[in-house]
Length: 444
Picture 1 (cartoon, rainbow, N blue to C red):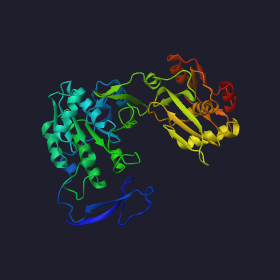
Picture 2 (cartoon, rainbow, N blue to C red):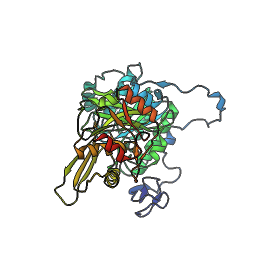
Picture 3 (cartoon, one colour):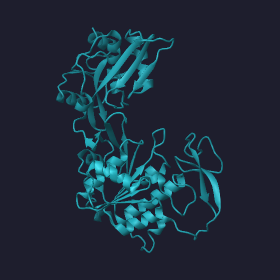
Picture 4 (cartoon, one colour):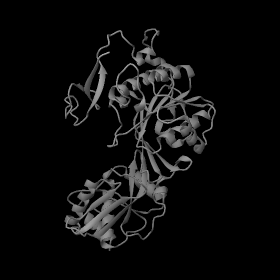
């Protein structure tokens, strides 16, 4: 065995003998990480685990596409929000990747899925490479997941895991997590680019070969992206991201890739002591405890996936004690906030040059679409002028640099959600063309 140190781009897996600041293949900056590969093996020495599970098989034969008229069977998770996100349930032979920040609820959601599948008289195999069986049992006791058909084992060796999957013949397999697995066929520690890629390929072949769904749990980096090579996301069939503020109960589950369903859906959950609970009316959840005559408060209708949510945006304006005023936002893009403040000063005569401005999206929600610009601007103007906005007001619109209010997409869907909750006043670009007109009329 002869080892060699190389630098691999985690975005496109390009290899270099030395560290490079920019990848010459995908042009990504600072994406190279150090890894160790084996260059001493001959072509026939050792076997790749992905190839090992396919040995003694006959060569594949092409089949007519018309013979596959029926879709693969799906196993429902008994969680309506998650089933909608997946396109109707978990597909046989699929490889699903679930990722999120530490402590956000990945293991909790996974164990709830295992409980739901086991209740349908199916066998579940939970392979943990991080936690002991006793630790998982404590969580299972809290969630009430005591089904005898859920079998748990602690293992992080790839070859042992593949042999275990083949022996147990379970209906659903969980691997927690892909970053702690390692193969004896490759040098280097678990979590390296080569180890993660090889382990994911082997598990992908196992899922297709034995037609069993496998759920992988993945880590994220400090930037919030999936840890490991970019090819990991290309290998799997579905990529799920669970996000939210750990100091709030709200959790959003998004599908950024789904070969068996839409990627335009989002599932909403609330975390409590008994696990994740579905939120059937997210808008009502966001507005709980809102005061009717609050200064610096404005409602907006935002679209997450294909669903409209009514959320509250709060703003606070206070006299600065320093020469440079502070701008801070929680759940809203700071650069966009600074742009809105500049527009208010230039076109709406709202002098914020000596004011600290703080903006918060209530409930831990993160808004990225520009349709919330008008609500943010009105909330800031309300806080500055100490005038409350109408309690039943919904503001939707994008703010232009010349002070105009621009139209946004899916206006009818937003208005329908507002009327369902009893909000009759919806401010759109059709009613006010300039931000100065809206502020003058609403903050008298």
